[in-house]
Image (cartoon, rainbow, N blue to C red; front, side, top):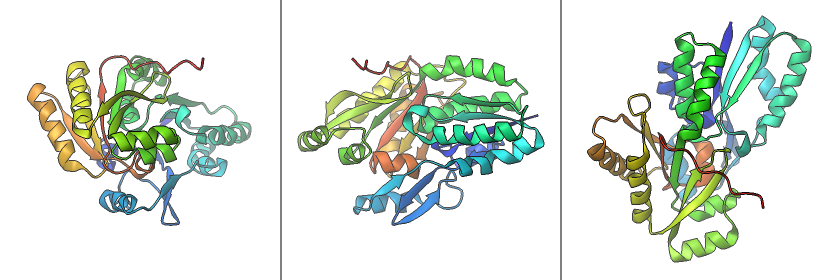
Length: 296
């Protein structure tokens, strides 16, 4: 028997997880107002309007990694029963948390030999990971093997895209995604970089567009042009407490792609701590993601 796991950095809303019968969910931590919380897909402790309102008023939210004991708390009950684990995770390039997971697994493997643990790295974050979790969970519920699901995701992952426009570059700067100089001049010049996922699971700034409305038009038009497999996968619009704008993006997509399933969801607090209020991201399956820039 195999247990299916995901984490809340995939940003499924809890109703989606419930529909897919996903019950083994690793809750990722964030801190705001001096208090730490575990994000549970919005089931109990997350009011996105309150969270982004605090960020707008100047409060700072931070995120942290789980420790080995946290991971053992999630996994050991299954190791103890001799039950294999299949975990579809967010990108290992986005966090150091997986080194602590590996520490926990080393202990568990020594204590309970013979249990098989497979982690599939979606090389994505937010609903870029979430779309892959949804696809994997559907296949898992149909009785497909872990090997079959991984083979499917190997084809899906490189073409699962996120294009993001942020409102305030200071949040990206604080999270290390943008330099101080870029954030300063971007703010002065009203430049909006478009953030995208790479094939390697990192984030890069691609186009730099003058003005928010133009930037939103760029990512919306790109989505309309490049999205595919629309009979299998929805398009998902994520927003940082700017639902009216997100709904306008949805209307534009539906006017061009009327048979498409388009979802609108709030960004969760862990991702929201890094991108800030006013962020809009479009997640879809379509063309291949860009490569990360060469280290040279």
